[in-house]
Image 1 (tube, rainbow, N blue to C red):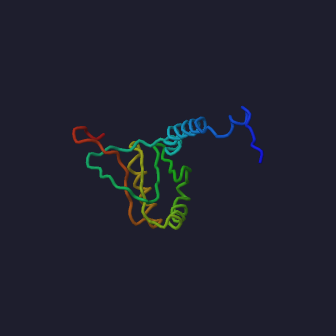
Image 2 (cartoon, rainbow, N blue to C red):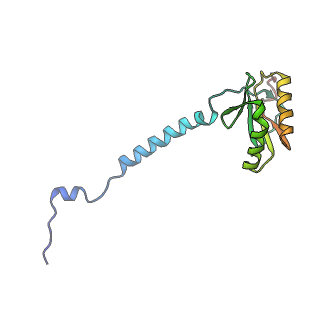
Image 3 (tube, helix red, strand yellow):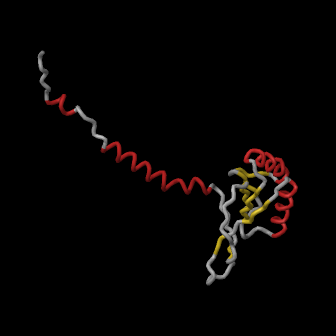
Length: 142
């Protein structure tokens, strides 16, 4: 049996160096961690009202945004008030819940907010939660 001698080039590639691969993966992970909050928040801005008595409650209900310009946004898409009831009913079936979380801007007129609540009740919403921002007891709610 003849033994084979390795040349210098063959010995260099006997094992794989994964350090550069690991560095690239970690850089990509950091990039995704930094950019993901921007993707989740969406393109529209809603300034929630502040309340000292706000409770932390996690709900798996349908999230509806009411912007200061009286636009209703569901799943990142603006919805007409005429189509809202049909869209909400479809989401109730899809998500298997009849709970709704309303995230209304603090600049929304009271009448517009009440009209949205009325549309939600018409669509069959059982539990309607109103999202606020909790402030500490030494700060005053705006």
